[in-house]
Amino acid sequence: MDSDSAMPPLSKASDKDNQSRRISRILSATGVLPLLISLAYTVLGEPDPTRNLISVATMAVFIALFLIFTLREALAHVTLILALQMLVATVMSFVPGVKDAFYIFVVYAVLCAEIGMALPLRTATKWFGCILAVTVAAYVIAFGPISGALIALGNAAGFFFFIYVGNLIHESEINGQRSEKMAADLRAANEQLQALNLQTQHLAIVDERNRMARELHDSLGHRLTVAAVQIEGAQRILASDPERAERMLRTVREEIKSGLTDLRLSVAALRAPLDEALPIVEALRRLASAFEASTGITVALEVPDTVPALSQNQRLALYRAAQEGLTNVQRHAAAGKAWVALGVTAAAMVLAVDDDGRGFDSTTPSEDGFGLRGLQERALALQGQLERGRSAHGGARLAFSFPLATGGSA
Image (cartoon, rainbow, N blue to C red; front, side, top):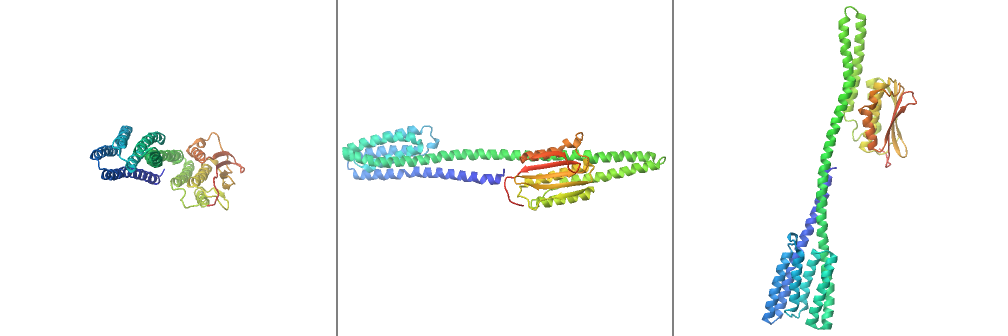
């Protein structure tokens, strides 16, 4: 996974969560303003000093509890604060006897918004029922049965609206917390994936080094050992049997030439096998040409006119299949000619390598070596398969295939 592409969405999610919290705090803080306005409006319109004192005292307690509520994220018992505010609001509704619907409406509107922001909607609805009962009683006492009931029921819609809006803010905060947790989990998973990716790359490098070391040891190392032994033998019999020494030196020359060929193949495998902009057909042509020049084995290349669009992994797998097939031809087949065919069907790509040599030998160790095992792993990764068998040309056949998901050409 690419960390650069993964992190921006997480950052955006975190910004949205912070924005949601800021909006919630702003709305909470602005609730003080209508409370102060309603208090001033009531005090100025109420000539009784005792009622004014009660109104100021109860409103001061209500505002203090409201300010405490704004810090609800750090509170352990938010419901207790709401219950105390409900108690103070009930006192404010009955004890002063203030005949002002605006005063009572503002107090309970703010309380409903707090309930919606702090509690789930189902629980907040139960609180709404209590508030409705209290306000109906307060309005009936203050304005009479008919007028009081009508005013209470009219305000009930407003109270529920504030509960609902507060609940939207509550859900937004919950979703924000979930989003932050998910973002943190994704960041942790992304870091683990990066670590695993680095570990996989390291293991792949180690495995490739081990494979190349084994190939160099089995091919070049073997040939140089044979050459060294032949040279020592030729030195010992050079004076007594010069003709035999000359034959041994010719053997040394052939071994060195074969060793150089193996070295060229190994170096070619270590180089970048496929440029990102190089089509698979052109890559196979270069591979076949280089193989012919290095080994003297003729390669007949068969490719289609058009090739479906392939991913980098698919193109690399096809190239490696051709490379491994030709390497086996050179090392084990004793062939004079090889055929490399790239085939396209409606549902699959097939890369086949045939030769006119001696065919597969079940006793040949290389058939269970790194090369074919690596091809088998590539085939499984692409949901494809690797097949070996007898070629129509008399030698061995290696077929690598995988299904195609989409069409197009490249």
